[in-house]
Image (cartoon, rainbow, N blue to C red; front, side, top):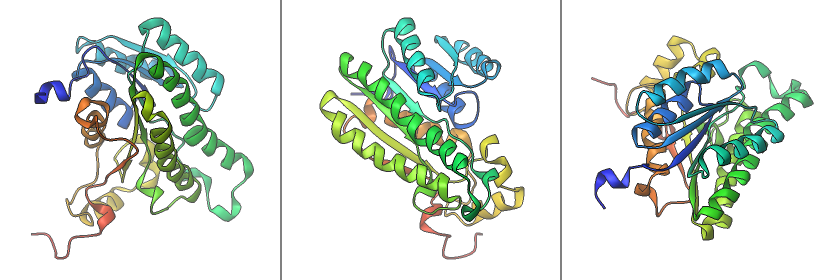
Length: 261
């Protein structure tokens, strides 16, 4: 296999949740660059239409669908729409999630806050994966990529972190059970990424500090996630399943041992 073929998604269909901005948008665009037709979904159609236009400008088909990942009925309709429009699904990227910053301390957390985060970040991702996997099983395989977080290993917002730790383990479970159908399941665990999703959690100074404290010396941007996700979607990672790749500029290993020059 040559490099271009290993990373090609030519003739494939990718579905990206939370595809209107941030990491989802960056990954939807790189999937299109790699040759895939792309379905993007979020709750707000006008935002999706803008990204769909960017995908079409690359010569690929785009299908924007307004859907709420926290509602199982919406996910069923979404998969049926993909099946009707394209007849297959080769890549699913579980990216949509509820931001945790507004929910306050753990000791004051109400049941509805718990339910919201679990429903969207975990339950929604699982059932959409299940629906997609049934299609993938029929067609002979596929790749499921979920967005976890470094908070799965080092919590700052505990309930959010619980959902992301569960995504890591769910990824292993899906890989183990669905591997015989040639369905691979992997995840990425981003550190801080400069998106609207985390805007309220990070000041400019805290982003600078986080960057300075990582070995590579920089805060993440959405395009930093797109490369690892394309790798996991493509045949370049065809022998990898059940894994979570930490993408955080090395922040999880700690700051460099000496001041930067």
